[in-house]
Image 1 (spheres, helix red, strand yellow):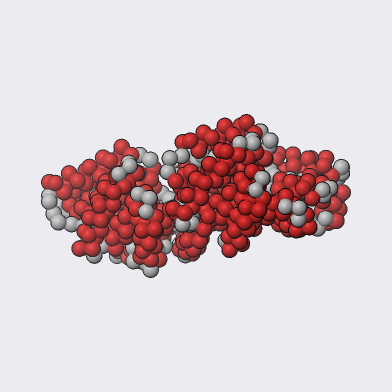
Image 2: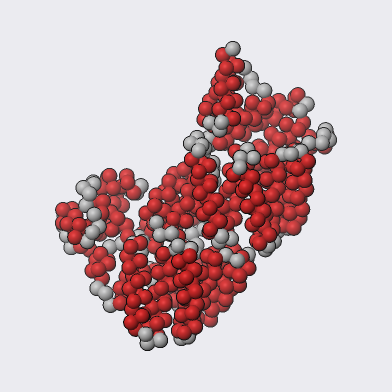
Length: 545
């Protein structure tokens, strides 16, 4: 009776998505008496959803063997599919291929008509899509979807819808592909599919939205994913990448401190997962925020960590070199990554930095080519974010070429787009160029007002390098930019003013105590003070505390 009660609690916990309870109760039940295959499968899924990947694969393999022994071919194939799926997530492609092959062999030996035949089409379709034959992948996904419809299997039907959308996007038809992604998201957001497939679809769609620069859709679905994760506190997969995407959106909207907190949380979450690239993505977002705030040393460290975890540090690292005045390094890096980017979304990722750097090294011809390419891609993808970037790029090139009037028209278009996207930093960068264009047309009053408006935004955001550039254009003394303090130094000074020790500050900011001490020392030097009390007085005087 005790074992039956434990099993009942495990099944109920699984049904209500209490993954940790389900894992614990089913494990206890299995210790008393070996579980049946279906309970083993649920135990394995609970293990996967609580981050115990190795245990999940072991349990699924056991369930597979039990199903084979019982002659339950369909369920044995289902287990083989999920072991293969988890192997792909870990990057164990040979093991994944072996499990998929085992599933196909079982169906050849016992040609039962089952929905699992459709599941085994999914990895074949994915291989076609990402192997360069997206059209073939689309057709295979479509057949899998028909099998899902025939057996009324929501998971397979949704995976087919997702795959067809991804295939169309890879074929360059985002307008037809994105609605299929939305359709897949509707299925998962209404609770029609399993938790594992739900998380898979969420991450795939949000990633696709970011790749397409469809930030409005990405923001909407990221919020839905965040709510779904919050409702399942035990959930380990999906949560980390979700936080990275939230951080990216917060950065765009100017909430840089919140974005840094989210990126750090994502890094900590993802350290427990096997996805090295996702950890690198979190480090890259941290690096971008450090760079924007002028914390160049920390930015460089974070870019290095991103690279060590398999995530490219470009174009952010090239922009960092530009900000540091290392123009040759910036130019070499951005040319290399741009030359290696073959598909339009990849090129679009690098083109804004490419245009800025080419202008900085006085190569307006290359900059114009990049701006024109960016405009073409923006029109193809029909993404407001890309269109704003393209207008900014064209405006900056026209201004460099001496056509201030044409530049002004493009820049005002970009500024209006940034305001609609609620992107204050990008809007301020554009406004800075509007000010320069007005000055070039001898409208100095308007030009100075535009520059001052951009400067105020930079100051509010803590964009110290941009603030310094605006100060120079306006002839403002550096002392108004907090005596040359970087964004991180301003942040630490504010915490010093609250009376916190270096150790407490290090804990709050998730950095080393040694790093805090270095920043405090640099701050004292720049402010020409020798004590924490004097630094605190400065902080209160300048409204930093």
